[in-house]
Image (cartoon, rainbow, N blue to C red; front, side):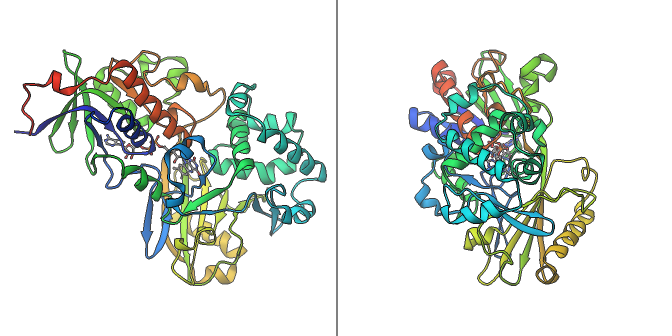
Length: 462
Ligand SMILES: Cc1cc2nc3c(=O)[nH]c(=O)nc-3n(C[C@H](O)[C@H](O)[C@H](O)COP(=O)(O)OP(=O)(O)OC[C@H]3O[C@@H](n4cnc5c(N)ncnc54)[C@H](O)[C@@H]3O)c2cc1C
């Protein structure tokens, strides 16, 4: 007979959002029995790191933004051993790398920034003044401002030149939000810009996956390599969670902490389908954005010594598809490569240009571009791995309707005891995932998580 067990609450998914829910429940009501079920072999979801021949490859190039309010409340920064990026980026334009820095955080870069051919003098002044005003803005201010496509904001509000927008702001923010500037919300742009103005982006010594390991260390009952096949609701209002392998867990409440496509599949078990959702609720489940990161190991030191992001600011196309950003993560954090070696990452952002291609077609073409930039270095570079992540982030096309998206019950559409969390319910960031996870937990606690013992006093626990 298949095994059956009970719990007060089952959380499906051990990504940042699910583990944030587990953490909040444990803090607020430590006696609750909470089971977190994850189909992957490790926790973290989209935030994981693989060790490939001694190189730390994050599953897609990503950075830790230290000023995220939820991150500050969640992680032990000291234990993460964070290593900082320099602010700004080196922008490849006209075959050369040109510095765009933040002279307020790096006064020593003032002259180089002023002389840099990226943007006019007027652009630099306008960005500097905007930066000063941003630091005084609160998150509430920013999210109550008028919302429009980011490109309109940069062009019509900040009045920046097209060249500044296309060489710097486009690749920098496309690297973060994966979409072009006309499909990004100006509120998200302003919020991220203000966070970058306040503090650094960094990498943990153990790779981005260290964030997941730190969060998972507080989760008491974490079942890895276990897929949830179905969630159903019994007549008495309790839930039955069916796991791969035949086991079922009966519980009073369920948190679906999965990405939007996986959530939609599981919701069908409780009779909620995409057709039942309308307007902004249906928008939550729109197709996400894809990214593709390639890693190479170099048998020598990196050709760029600065711990900084590299952007492709070339406006003319040099490939059948466009490289957005590059980085030598090992220059930011030495542990990303064995001694004397360097790690190179290259990211392509969501695009139809490569949607129907596979790794064997794309890797040689990307490598060819890198060979044009660094011929000697790339001659001996070893391709390590690529990560193509089909649902890298939810779409964040304006209007984002952030307050409604935060409602874990989908404005009362879901049956009692079932709540959702994930970055698609908040902002498409690590902060958004943590925040939505906390909101889901608080929502359950407010409405009563439901104690399993009362419902299943007579159940056989195996
Ligand atoms: C390449 C890339 C770069 C990024 N860069 C940044 C960045 O620099 N800064 C930033 O803030 N954010 C970044 N993000 C976004 C950030 O990583 C995500 O917003 C966040 O990690 C999402 O967490 P989540 O818990 O909502 O979802 P997920 O991480 O997707 O977690 C969902 C979990 O549910 C599990 N699951 C799904 N179905 C089932 C099932 N049936 N049974 C059991 N388990 C299941 C999955 O395996 C997964 O572990 C990046 C994302 C990617 C992909």
